[in-house]
Length: 479
Ligand SMILES: Cc1cc2nc3c(=O)[nH]c(=O)nc-3n(C[C@H](O)[C@H](O)[C@H](O)COP(=O)(O)OP(=O)(O)OC[C@H]3O[C@@H](n4cnc5c(N)ncnc54)[C@H](O)[C@@H]3O)c2cc1C
Ligand SMILES: NC(=O)c1ccc[n+]([C@@H]2O[C@H](COP(=O)([O-])OP(=O)(O)OC[C@H]3O[C@@H](n4cnc5c(N)ncnc54)[C@H](O)[C@@H]3O)[C@@H](O)[C@H]2O)c1
Image (tube, rainbow, N blue to C red; front, side, top):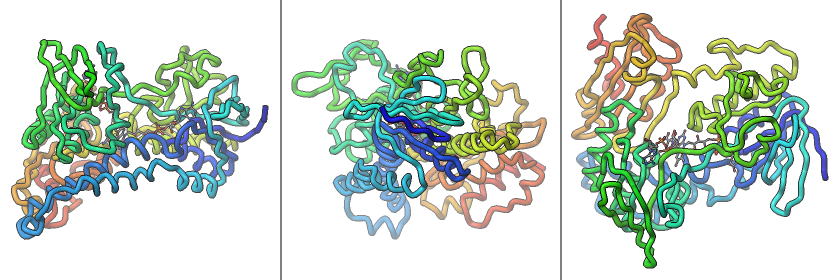
């Protein structure tokens, strides 16, 4: 058995693991990273990048059709084969050579195989050929193993070989009929994408569509999915599933109704990749989400860091926020804190300190790439109320600003800001409308910066842009 010692060993080379390794290497420590599939993780090959590529061409076409002059220039339909080819290139054709050479130029050692913690600071890597390498970390081990699709215990579901987000993201053809179980982010985006690509889509949204967003967001998405021909079945629950010999999938709903499709996508959330990473060797439960403190140290059942604090977890696997950008934010904090602790430097773990992932709590931005796009940061009105904040909610019609009218004929959208009345700062902001994704960062800065409303009056939106909605919201709030 080979034995190799590094300062830091990272298990999982998704976006989060890669960033952690890079950060500690930049801090002067020697890092090894362990990956069992493709360097780049879920986001690069089966999640963010390919799914957005599947959505983008139809969005561009819709945008052109909303502007007279451009509309007349669009004479054909979406070219599905070209969309899938573009998606393939955004998934790097499911090859990780580019990312592997990036690791190498960053001075990070890559070990391919399944990583498992075998004892304090020791990770064993089992390669495809069964050979084992033992890696010892002088300072820290970081778990960045991400998450996989959750498949519920519905009778016949597993035997019916359903799609998860992976098969949807990497589909080589568009099914004639696609049924989807779920109403969250993956279900909404994939219903949008596959309807845009010509599939006949049925969405079984037991708990509603985008139920965690502001209610107007889900309502707009349902409306537009239905306009696009999607059958959105709010409250419908799959009771059992069967795939016939001819490949047809039949879903029997709990009320007895039967729905047939060529493929069935299950999109009801995620499960952590912790089943086989050696958690039992350190007193934790295999298959469970990991609990961490604000500097991302893994906590044991007693609420204290494991051992002397040598074990960290970042990204999806700690369940704080299941988003790439937020996982990479955690990666910067965890990489820097490992370096600081290794060098005996001060740890800045107070609120908004360099080594604390404070924004995870109440300042998370997210864009859902549906039609319309849903861009949000911070708390919804309901979440703010549940958190006990005294709030005022201000709404504005996003279509009623000059910039929106110019952007597209018939522009429809909505904006909401949630103000903490005791501090007179924005704690939540949601936009629903075409191309609102790029408007989000202004709101994120206002929320993270806790910019007083009085000062925001001096942040003047350029005319004529959609951002003028900021002024309208302030006017509605009053000075
Ligand atoms: C369909 C879909 C679309 C999404 N779109 C977006 C989006 O648009 N924007 C966004 O911000 N987020 C999006 N997300 C979420 C995003 O993909 C995740 O938040 C992100 O990938 C998490 O990164 P990670 O590094 O924590 O985990 P992962 O990306 O899951 O990477 C973990 C890596 O660890 C490896 N690994 C696991 N266990 C081991 C082991 N024992 N040994 C060695 N290697 C191991 C895995 O092979 C994997 O490469 C989407 C998710 C899905 C499912
Ligand atoms: N654009 C983006 O930022 C983006 C895109 C896709 C995914 N993601 C991330 O990936 C993660 C996973 O997405 P997801 O859509 O799978 O999960 P999700 O948690 O967003 O939504 C899952 C939905 O399924 C419902 N559900 C749960 N069990 C069910 C059941 N048995 N039957 C029917 N419905 C059920 C839930 O009520 C929920 O609404 C999300 O947390 C999200 O952050 C982000």
